[in-house]
Length: 481
Ligand SMILES: NC(=O)C1=CN([C@@H]2O[C@H](COP(=O)(O)OP(=O)(O)OC[C@H]3O[C@@H](n4cnc5c(N)ncnc54)[C@H](O)[C@@H]3O)[C@@H](O)[C@H]2O)C=CC1
Image (cartoon, rainbow, N blue to C red; front, side):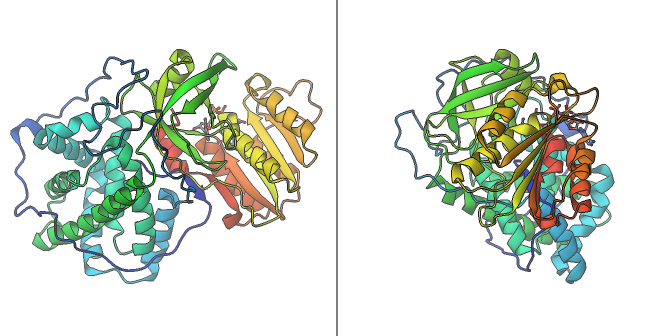
């Protein structure tokens, strides 16, 4: 399940409501364990890579999903809306649930959650085994190896159901999720199947707290959740494709592990600087990974990504070592709210670590295009001088724009030939300079950097609502691999 990946350091609000649309068929009894589930199923290995250059829509395309040949009239571009994140959603919900009395359904649902939490892995495995056993036709919608997917789908479903009292945040979060599911070929008719298996897995493992009342509460919650997702997907279908095909037009190896990959989408791709997309390669069908756009939107419509091949990273290794001009990848919808706030004249303090510099570069270009002079201070961190693969581009931008300052920071050794280079950790470098009170902060890089970077930024006086960064939870889950 596709959780959004950008967060501010702040959280949202909440309200109370739930819905019951009555189409979800509750299980009358707790399901008996099918015989096939008594032995845990081994995940299948990845399938043989397929070449789908200039491909037909993939086989898991839903019958009603639109296909978009190159000459298809483009849907009206929809300005991407910042969306909530799992992080902010969870934070908001936690504070809200502390402040407001929980509804009877929420109490029952939380009881189930408390009981299954220590065995979450088992519940997840059981859920998928049940789903694929009862509905083998759905298996094709999921990746061959379920490692990442296993965590994401079940966590998101359960998180959403658990917090069903908090209508505003929930609706925004689930709407994003519903839109994101279009690229998997998810249809309204799939939701009851998933719901029944979800209840099957919960009732099987929450034996102490499960009752007819509990089941009814879960049915109401799941029905509300799925209806929001279905409605959002249906609305989105009118204005945007489920995915874009994009042809690789340039592939530049900056180091043996890092490539800048440039693609041409088959139709206009509206997004904002600082956002990310999801990418599927032809070699690993249904395995989607997040990458940020490395430029602001360009007049020629091309999109660039900075990809680092990481150990066991299927998508990243394919993009770095295998992709070549002419290959066609698929892109999901843009997401994320690490975008420039153009309503203020505050300066921008941008901290980018490793390939996390990609969206920072996009933000700089965005400020440049506005033509409004705002101080932009970039701290570009890498493990060593050798790893500063994009420093020349950043310094070229600095030469052109007098309001821009770029400071390379390396964790080990020194920065050769750059008088303003800093040795040490990025958060320490930020603390050393300033003052930063008049700045908005943008933070992008590995999860450890995000965590320590937020602490440093708060410490130098930037309030949490002016700190934007990719979601740590999502970075950890997907590893941007
Ligand atoms: N490719 C993309 O479009 C994007 C990638 N990312 C993420 O950026 C990361 C890039 O990975 P690499 O290039 O291998 O980065 P890396 O591991 O080489 O680290 C880059 C910088 O972050 C610092 N750093 C790392 N951990 C830290 C910690 N715990 N505290 C303080 N500083 C820390 C390092 O010292 C270095 O300066 C990945 O996690 C990726 O998910 C984030 C946004 C966009």
